[in-house]
Image 1 (cartoon, one colour):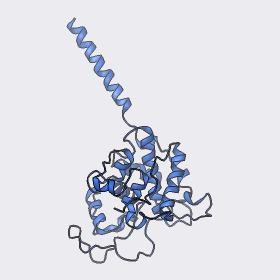
Image 2 (image 1 turned 135 degrees about the horizontal axis):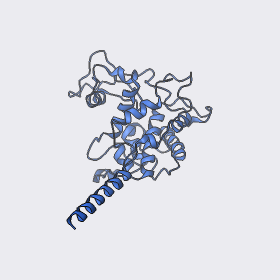
Image 3 (image 1 turned 60 degrees about the vertical axis):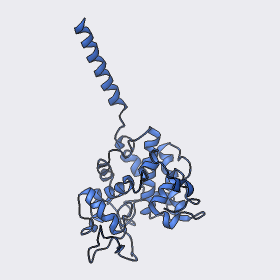
Amino acid sequence: MALSLASSALFLSLLFSCFASSMEAKPISSLIRKKLFDTMFLHKDDNACPAKNFYPYKAFIRAAKTFPEFGTTGSLITRKREIAAFLAQISHETTGGWATAPDGPFAWGLCFKEEINPQSNYCDLTNKQWPCVPGKSYHGRGPIQLSWNYNYGPAGKFLGFDGLKNPEIVANNSVIAFKTALWFWMTETRGTLSCHNVMVGKYVPTEADIAANRTVGYGLVTNIINGGLECGILNDPRVNDRIGFFQRYTKLFNVTTGPNLDCAFQKPL
């Protein structure tokens, strides 16, 4: 009888392990195949795009492995929506589209890899933790257009490169470029606030956030990324562009966008 009970216990343990494994989130490569990626970014490798051949699908998938919770947290709908939101935001940051562009303005994401004619070197001299290196510019680079010394420094430290001495690598290495965008997306800036946490339902708003009408949704992600310039403004064309990309991508993923797409009534972060 003891042997029978032990065998039963072993069987149940193995059965549970198999069930648990089957419930684990699949890698994002199972949710966004190369064909879908290429459909989203129809023109990224056109001759007209300065970033031609810089943003291959394999680089995105490889970079995502550094952040195992990205696109794998929550329900299937939540996972697809987060991937769509991330790709929509980086599409706006790197867009080469215009109103009458072939295939529409939202088919031209990932066209640029570096800010054109930056107006400054984006050096915050007041930040002593991540001091600027003389002669270096911390202007926008990569899919998220990583900017400022206080972002290049910690991003490089986390990812294994010297962001202060070698910021140029973000525009020269495709995998690192995607990694910096995902680092920004996943990193909590205060409390539970991060683009990832907002999209997967892990963000817990503070009393100040509630008072500032920072409602959970894609609009809050825009606020995190560039709220100081774009939020609290009615019908801002930059915000509308971000929304347009998101609507196109969620449609391709066959999921809804969720509520609160813009940040017009949110106080900027």
